[in-house]
Image 1 (spheres, helix red, strand yellow):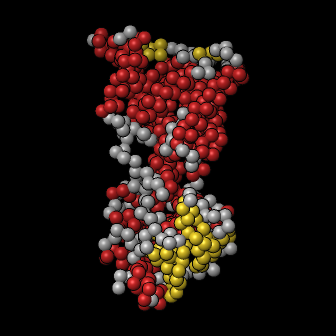
Image 2 (tube, one colour):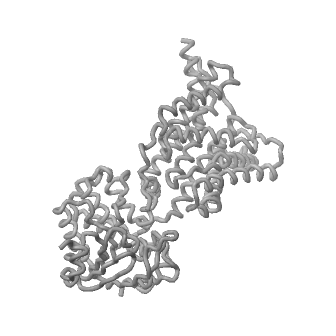
Length: 307
Length: 237
């Protein structure tokens, strides 16, 4: 019984950690699906999202605390932040990637790295090196259910992440923009022949990936309230690992591998000393990848046709 | 003239694919360009639909508008030029219906879209039977039907067709050309490029012959069919 509780407790912790990886890694996969490149600025977009979320949360709490119920302030913070950070995504596409669309892939890849560095140093210059602390958007409550502890923050992180993924799935399956994104992932060059502008779909994809990352940023700020200009680096790389492990361009795969990463990290940490966590966790992933080099949901070969 | 092409030049890097070719297409006609593999047929169509850049001194005019000022998607959505590309290029991960609907991405006329879709399904019954299937699961012939149906949905002023007969069994080929005649009779101009010269010349009213990036012959289709040079080079007789 105690073992079962122990496992369930860790499963919840793993689902929380996996939620961050899943929501962020989807952004990598969406962009890869549409443009066949990895947006290496994505981890830093997550960081910018956390900072903008911090600004909006501080502002809204300052104005509305006591006037509006906390969940409403939370919702308003999420929606406003998503909207603003979507434009950061659009900016990255238009200013960073679009001029290099026909350039060699490596040039596009370093564009992302450079934009990331610009974001990091930009935040550092604007806000200084002092670490900021994300204000709590809800009063923390701990529930005790059958020997398992779960805070409302943790539950919210897991639920909101799932809701975002369901909404994204619906968007991609049901709307004409989602249809165009799927078409682009199949045959990039035939899409303009349908009267669809790539300069509409590409920034939309970046905007959605950035919007998702910004929600992850807010949620992260609720779980680990210290903001740091480099907070997006490690988590960004790990989410990138999830995007590859899930299968390049596969949103389903990215979500699945994001959770898997969370589970492996948490369960490794329950067995081994926590200093060895990443060493062991990522060795396991390396072994998985050597057996499944295209990831879990990767296509056998690219179906993309080129001229 | 609906489409005027003058001194069209296209290069892939240092390789000249088209050297100053000129031709024109009248509204409502069926025109074909025949030629061997690599002669520049696909390049010509791709330049018109702006999939690839043409030399800036080339003249490409559609209904008096300079095509060089339009992007590939606007050529379709603003001017009504549709292109059935080489190798069909249908979206295999989308259903048949989704492929048709995607082609109307920029269109707002919902009623007309529904009417066009019904017309395509009437023309190609097989597509209607398989409308919920992923396009990648269709047979080659059905995929070609979908590529043509999709192009019809995207724009109906002129249709550029790149080897629609490729990979089709003879019977299916004839069905396909009957369907194209039907589309033409609705007022859509057809510009067809084909390696299968006999079939193309029987179908079209007028033809050009392209060789190594130059147009070398022009004439009514029946004349080209009996021209000894054409016969020798392209009709295998």
